[in-house]
Length: 400
Image (cartoon, helix red, strand yellow):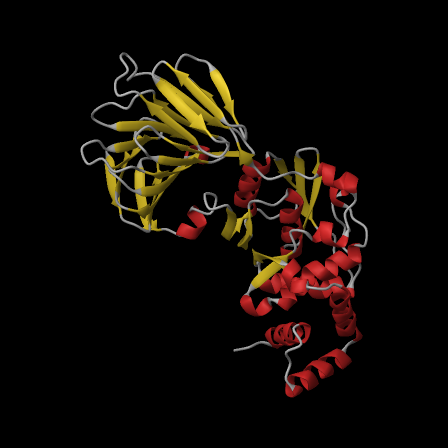
């Protein structure tokens, strides 16, 4: 059933596109005359051309809450934002940002302009300097002999002792000669710090996406019987098929995932093990327990007990696909992702609920301020940055 606000959204969009019928025009005019605040809202949109084109799609965060906060914003004073993000014309940005909920409510999406500051000239130049940029491709590779090289945006080609790596600034290809004596028990270690991610192709052709704050240890040369790597943190694998040489991801010695050729994600943050299968088939081992996963399933290991359930692939693979995707996630879970991606020390105010859940999504290629802008309109929380420290607290009550 179409709600009143759904109907208003359609009328607003139709008005901006100059596509209203006579009946819709009459309905829209009646809505305008009903409340002066409706006229004020429309006037703000008329001041800004190509509104829809400037509002880039981000997923909705708790639509009902967002709608209520929109009404509060229009009726009460502008909200207080963090010192590092304080901007001129707060009233205008409040209306524009929140009104995007109204404009595109029919599609259940909350839209914010990624270029809002640049387009409208609302942010001060000094404040941009304090913003936190999203994670970028970067890692350190520690060779078996202990030497370390940095792999960031610059291209690197390295040859040594039968090993060749080629890094084009986005992806590293690692290869070896057919036979390297006395190297099968020696390991290289890829270290990906916070605020970074990395993509590489192993010698067998297996593709690996490594998330922030993760380590991937792999042999200088794979053995003839298996391809075993060791993971701390999170990584997504697209394993090259070799029927006679299985690929094994070892988590901590007694937990592992064994495959022949498949696509899957492994998350070991906080001493846990989550394995999500996108394609193929894998075996999950924990102690003396073993379970087989089919596509679309997820294994969660607790104290060597393997629990298998249906997976939410969009959620579990969101990081690899360049997206924050929250679905009934509490604030601790959200903060964990933000901490990894932006290298933050996150603290909660004493009155902040860490059990309340939120849903929505936003691209990972945006600055921290845009994520916090979205969260501030979707929740009753405020965010204050000081260096790399982010404090989350309850927003002061607004007048209604």
